[in-house]
Amino acid sequence: SRMTMTATSTRQELNHIYFFALTTAAVVSTVKLFCHRRLPNKARDIENDTDRNTQEHDAHKTKQAKYSDKHEISSLKESIEHLEKRLKEANSLRLAERKGRTKAEISLRKLYKSNVAEQSNLSKNTVFPLHEIGKITTPFPKRMGTPRQGTLAPSSRAKLALDTSVVPPATLEGLHDHSHAWIIFKFHANTNLLSIGSSEGSTEGKIGKIKAKIKPPRGGGSKVGTLATRTPHRPNPIGLSLVKIDAVDSNKGFLYLSGVDLVDGTPVYDVKPVVPFDVPNYKYQHPAEKVTAAPGYESEISQSPAENCKTVQLESCCSLTVPWWVAQNDELTEVVFEESAIVKLTKLNDDGCFMPLYGVMKKKHVWCKNSSLEELHCIQSAISEVLAQDPRSAKVRGTNSSASGKDLDPYRLVFCCAEICFIVGNDGLVKVIDIQEINFKNTDDGDGVPLADIE
Image (cartoon, rainbow, N blue to C red; front, top):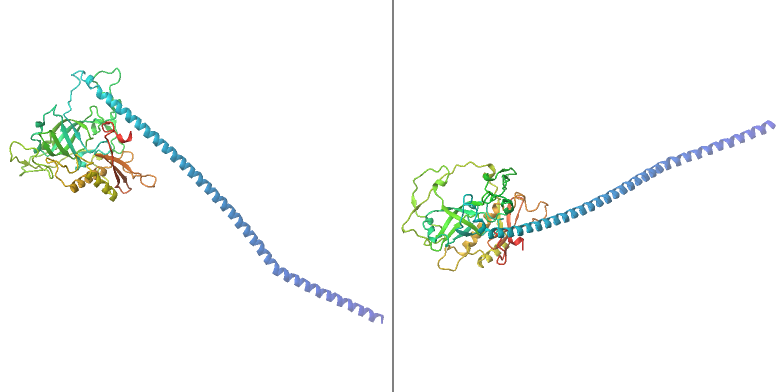
């Protein structure tokens, strides 16, 4: 019985242990299942938190970079505005300095002219006297805009009025039989009087100091001797210009010309007809006789004693050797007028703004019989020919009107009593955008100095 009770008790304890073991295994299995389902979600949460933190950090860095870029852009804009302001101030100072130098040059020129009588007392052995025989009227009151060669602007007109107290009008008789003439003149608009004038204590009649070499505007920066160029700043400011004879009035002493490259008011020393032997390597030919007359001009203004006088036309090929910068063709591509500019040009022509060189005259004896429309075309052609040669300074020649890429900055030149406002594009296209009349009646005689700039 005791052994039976012991066995029963042992069996119960084993049952309890077995039940406990089963329970523990179930709990362990449940825990394992829970952990198996729960741990990946936790890892995923941790990974998501890490990605979120990384994104927030990147967004913060991007925000800081944007702020830094904005700060740099703002700083650059301030620097650009400051530089533009300084550039504007420098340009203003430069313009003021130029105006001051221009005024001083005009005053010096007046003083120089007032001392002409004293200069006549110079030794005759060292000074050759030149007498002004007349003045020429051209459409170029300023140096800027005056063609560098008259043949480049064949539509430009001029009127030479002889000083009949020096030379009689009859000296022009027979000149109408020639098509072209040489004009010997003085570069009266030069601004280097200070550099060429005799210094204090120098010998009377001695030529002042001049530059031995200069940089031609189209020479690409190379220097050549002064006498190897056509510069107006010469030891003796004397020029030679080839012009076309349109009409001659030997009764009043007037000579009407075209293809002119002279500043308005230029003093003239002499006029010589062009002959075939002025052409290098000219060979005589037997041309057919032909009566010639300038189109649109009075043929009865000047007549030779023989009423049936005939002239001949000669054609000749010229053989010349010149530097490359002389022969280069740097003409701009095209010149166009905006419609508003043409309207203003037409009105100025009708108002007689371009008289006496262009326009329809209301007199019986006139030297030009073109209609108003034909004269308008002549004026437009003359302006186009001048602009095609790029009359801007050598520093900006060959560029467009604005180096900053903004709206093109206009340039201005004066033709007769009209201010021509134009721009130059990247493709070499010149566009005339405005034309305004200028009143020079109350301005001082600046001898080609830009009068409108010093008012």
